Image (cartoon, rainbow over all chains, first blue to last red; front, top):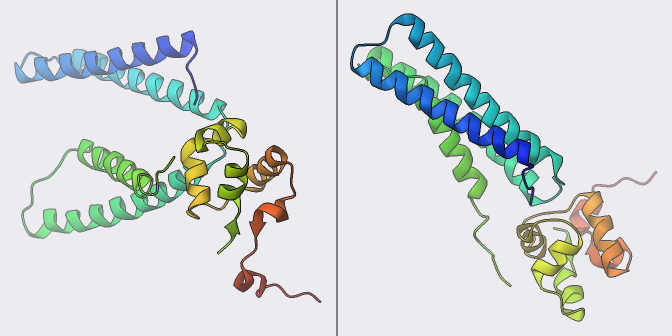
Length: 132
Length: 74
């Protein structure tokens, strides 16, 4: 189990706060129709920097540890499954958008779907066979 | 399928899966997966198992005859 150093904890917390604060403030101002373009840029840049900081600190901590084990096999399989599912679903939905009138979706939808598919594929089979 | 004697070797030493996992620096899930055949270990983990049990790798793992059938010895 990889543990975070103090600096990494700070980076993770700061990144999370930056991401959610930037996204929520931008969302609220946008909903109130009070978001000038310069503020939108600033908030989006802050949110994205926070997200990169959060992910970079987490990945760095994970890679520092010993990565031997079944987790590597499961992560590889989950990544392959995710690429296949999201690519096929993306092309499939693009046809629905183009010819059937399905609503256009924001890029956050495939991103969230990819995260969900990866998580399910990674966990698939891991809960089976537990014993002590 | 490559079979292994991990449950036997572990039971002989009265180690839990968690204890074996801790001794070879992997997760308990890895030990569970090794024992039920869902995961074939890397050479690095096989060597750790060999070291922790004090036996050769061949004494832990039994090769798959079908897989060995693919080998051509000139």
